Image (tube, rainbow, N blue to C red; front, side, top):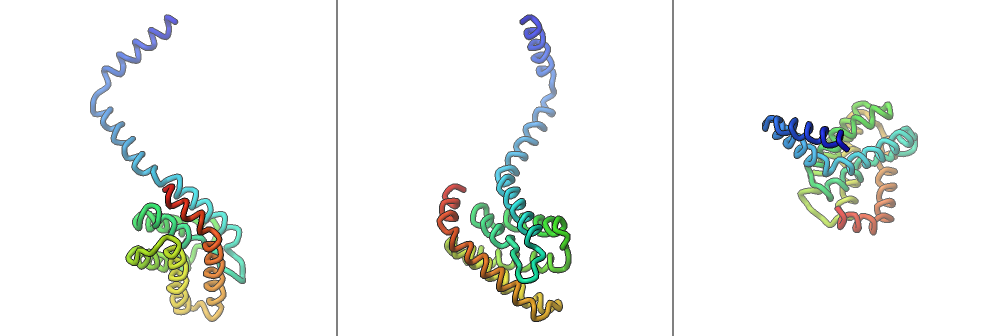
Amino acid sequence: MESAKVTGKWLSARLARLQLKYVLIFALVNILFLMLMKTFVVKLALFTVCAIVIYRFGRLPFGDFDPFPVAAGLLLLWYGFSTALQFILWTIPLVDIIAARLSQWSAVNFFSLSAALAVVSLLNPNPVSALILIVVLFNLIRLPITLLLGGGPNSFIPASTNSLFYLIVLSLMTPIIEISLKLF
């Protein structure tokens, strides 16, 4: 018990001598950390889902199952345009590096998804329509760019399977999306 009093007195004396600038720097770092952390867990979870889906299903010859439009659309609905844009700016290249498929198509995905997010944020439709519109616009914008870059006629298959797959998923997840919008 005596050692606890000694330690407590020593700690109190030490804290009393702490300069105010160090306390303010510590408080500022904590405030910045808390401001950045409010969306960190959600972005980390969506990044993990994107990485797993791309790594597992990214090389299928008959389809394209990029989850980026849905993940970015959810972030657009929950936190706004800047958070969604920041997410795709870092997620698309990192996930493509993890899946060993970083190429010019990563840039095509980024610019197509950025344009789709911008259009949907300007239109501001209801949540489920916004997600569906993001998926459709992403593929409609990506398709001509892919054809211009030499993707060939085989480009229609990945774009159509991506749209079809995520439209089915979004239609099945409509109640979950509505509940999540109330939570976030």
